[in-house]
Image (cartoon, rainbow, N blue to C red):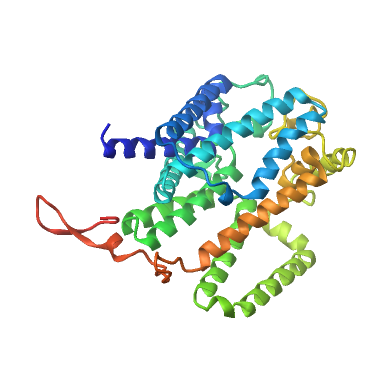
Length: 408
């Protein structure tokens, strides 16, 4: 196999794997659980083949200790789990996801991972809009998954539908992933990734602007209050990151004091204006049933506060105590609507401590990778913008004319 074809194959696999990670519900709604299982097996086989083909080295010193501790704690939880069979299934899913992630990190260069992520998001956004257009124009009403696992007779809760067909009325839309919050978050990822590629000169200007419009329009059509709040936080973080890049690392104390002040003021404003915020976002006082779910999860977690009930990841509805734990308007929810509460429920306070360390470590590394200038082999700082070779004018062998091209 030629190097070019091998590189293209690796890029295609990375795009497919990331598409499946972000839009797994699409495969389940389209092909059912057995079809989704086939897709998952293909992703894992590809990950193993990638590791075997490239034989990457593993640097344990660069592996985040908190991440290893969290996985280890989840594996050990099978010894005290109240549902060892479900925990074994949850661990299998966790380890499969871990193998896929490790194969991408070790075997695919960073620039290609970003390109693959952009490609996966493009596919999700484009297919979502086409799907919603088909539902609205051709079907003219809500659409159920192809292989429903529930009784389809009688009046069904709208949460059971794949799409409600509301594109032409301004949404909210669910897209191929079947959930407006998830689609909104993917659209927000798209805004971030496309903007970064545009700023780095790695995407043609017209193409980048077009995809930014698609991502922003999809985000607006989901009408997701959760993602809107996350988007505000992203803009605030961007502002502080831009400020940090403009000043010397030893003179950032005013920036951090300002960030702390903004955080305290935001919390105070949130407490004072909570009701007004709910009205603005169109939310009920119980946050669309979330308070009831949180209350039920908190009560259950309090029964095993230190080490939890055992790892399971996504709740399995046929196992106690998850059967009937979170039911609202006839819909049984299989997650706590809060990662922190879910970790407390499954791995206890010890798990929350490890999870906190993992989140803080990831934020710490991300922040300094974003604001500190990378250095070259001589220790000299590199510019923030891409090197000139990434935005040069290269001559076409056939025409001899210069054409802008990234990475030439």
